[in-house]
Image 1 (spheres, one colour):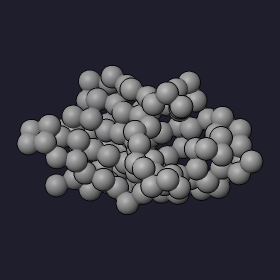
Image 2 (tube, helix red, strand yellow):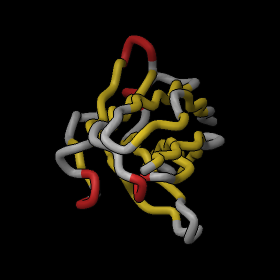
Image 3 (cartoon, rainbow, N blue to C red):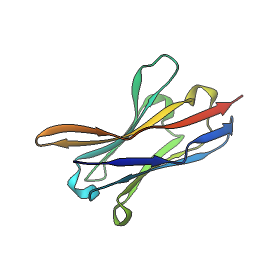
Length: 117
């Protein structure tokens, strides 16, 4: 079982920055992929960024060049640094942990990010 606790959301003006953090209850090296997803007003949950246990990263097109995902293995924590925020980034952001064997997804409780214009 993996428990994830997010923090760092809030209200920011367009052009501003926020950093989200997600602390896992297990060592990150035991998780195949950590990721951030978001769910906006349309209620569709979409991938924002992922990082594998090997350090490979993947970003959704709308956030590429603005957001950065990183990990601190000593703290079992994954971060999402969000710069140049836009109103369309407004959403609830969820931390995700994926283990491939057996395949299972774990989710945090979500943290609200609101960007005003």
